[in-house]
Image 1 (spheres, rainbow, N blue to C red):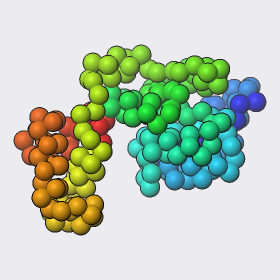
Image 2 (image 1 turned 180 degrees about the vertical axis):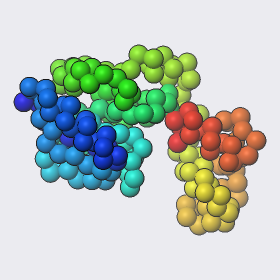
Image 3 (image 1 turned 120 degrees about the horizontal axis):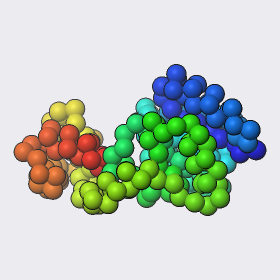
Length: 201
């Protein structure tokens, strides 16, 4: 029996996925989580064979949770199942050690088959998304540039961003300027939007 853990912040989707996977003879959903932090804690507790994670969840996103689960429960294979088929997300998922990246509109039988393939050591990636990721190229933003863009998303003042990230205001301005240029934006709000669309944040 393949033991599966699900992490999805929308209760209805989480319940539907658990029910669909439970119909498979060789799959058992042993735990469900509503956010990334809960997913990491449950993975350590129940030691599933596979962790199926959404990306956009509160407290800790699925990409961060994927890396933590791979680090703390190395025997657990991580699969990303998301609505957001963004090229940058795929690259970040692979960097975090995910074995699969699928979009939610895939048929249920494809998801069950993908779980079995992952446990055989295969990597399963949505073909259209793989092609888009290759054409989009790597994330041009450094980790610090991503941090500064994330912190500026709410429209925070430079001084507030500097304080929250323990940087000088001049350094924050430099990171913002570089990030804006790299994504071809006119200002930091547009830079955040473009980076989000590509899955770079």
